[in-house]
Amino acid sequence: MKRLIGLILVVGISLILASCGESALPMEALSTEEVQSSLLTEVPAELNDQEENDIVQKPFDGKIAIITSVFGSGREDVYVAEKLIERFGNDKIIWRTWPIMIENQDLMNSIVEELIFDLDIKAIVVTDAHLGTNIAFEKLRERRDDIFVIFLSPNTSDELPKNTSQIVDLAIMINWNEASTSIAQQAYDLGANTFIHFSPLTRKMFWFELIRRDLIEQKCAELGIQFIDIPIAGWQELIEKDNWNEVYEQLILKNIMQLVEKHGRDTAFFGINDIFAIRPMQQHLINTVINAGAILPSPARSMSAPDDIAFAIGLTVGNPNLNRFSPYEEIIAATRAELTEKNMLSRISTWPASHDRMNVYVAVRYAIKWINGDVPREGIDVDVLREGIDVDVLRSLMEDYAGVNVTLTPFTDEFPYVEEGTGETFDNFFMVLMDFITF
Image (cartoon, rainbow, N blue to C red; front, side):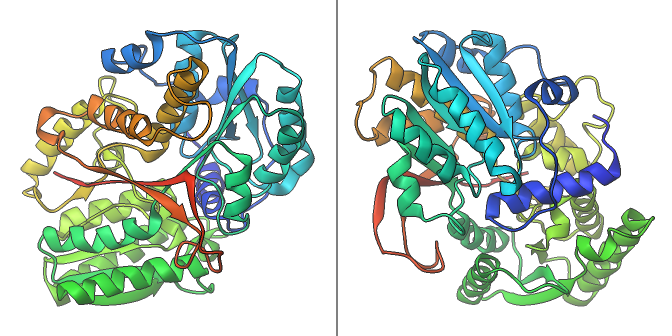
């Protein structure tokens, strides 16, 4: 995979911020054809047997539309969309892209308008339901009540969750607050006695960033872990530097090495600083922690999957037999072998699979069951939804790692999940969280 550094910087930050409802750099939307031709490479030719049996075994009437942002959330949703098109054909899976942010509401509206007039559309999955999505789909609901609508990663900072719940049939998002608490717990389980948290240096933290940091600090206090918050420069401070990559590599290296020297190897590192949304910066963080022999409970600001570790330590770079979309069991096995050589077992952990990839797969799987009448036409069958999540997580992990738990929690419109809310709990809006795997 080859990308320009500048493109990585702009798109990587925009995608992470988009999922959180933050402002992002404007970017002109590309057509579906442009995205397909420029992005969909280096993916395995076949789905594995479990995935194929679960989705393909029973066909469905009509069409399912998948809407991703221009580049999707790290390409994971784009990957799933492309594989589903391969299996069902572009006459059954309709794929559309729209802007990363709300800079073009008219374009978002027009995409939904197109789907409204296609009477064969039975379900729509929006993989990045950022600001403006509710407005676009309000128009759909005025005309069509026969389409099963699923929002993934809905914006709960700028959109009212109650409105979202009234528009959609199903919404799924990561349980970010529980994820924050789980990071501190995971650091403790890995043996950490100090937790270093990197925060933004120059900009004011958003309320949800403050909450996540505070939740980590509270859990560390409960577990007896020393919590240290360290502001470091973000991408805004480096974007104009020609050698920003090298500058930040040295900054991370210096910070982590000095901190490990001061606090010892049982020091865990994590941060919400937006610089870690950029993959080269995440790579520097991972490698520096490994070289220092410290602890990494999770590699990224927005969490991660096994391929992030494998990429950072060079296992998937130029490797014809292992890439980002290889089966997770292969990525996990190769990463574990490499970390064994580095004497870093039981020091590094991550989520066992990409939440983005899992959520798109589960959404389409549930939509097919809805179209086929295998689940109620009204309301959500939580057992079937949970079964779909379990299948997706377990299908691609080695037996040794198959004990991971997945938790589904109904969204409650109250602090700390929103800054101000109604206190209502929505039975069609779920937060999902996976347990960690440790290498």
